[in-house]
Image 1 (cartoon, one colour):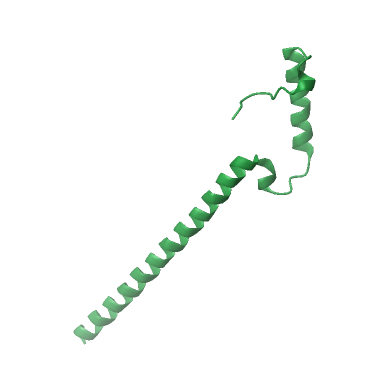
Image 2 (tube, rainbow, N blue to C red):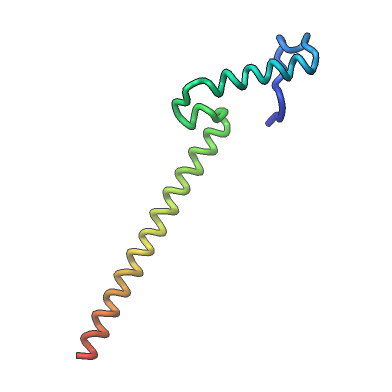
Length: 87
């Protein structure tokens, strides 16, 4: 992934300073545009990675919730049996 201004054919004839100024103008235009979705700001290859990471995070959250539910049920049963033994 490239860092810094992207040099397109139209930028080839510009000096580095002009190129940076033009890059700044384009950045301001992008910032002033209304953001529709966070996906709009990701290049396609990063959007795919972002989607896969989101899916993985959702699976992990469900897995942790499932474990919490089992542990809570187990604790409730142990408390119940402890209560019966003490009665």
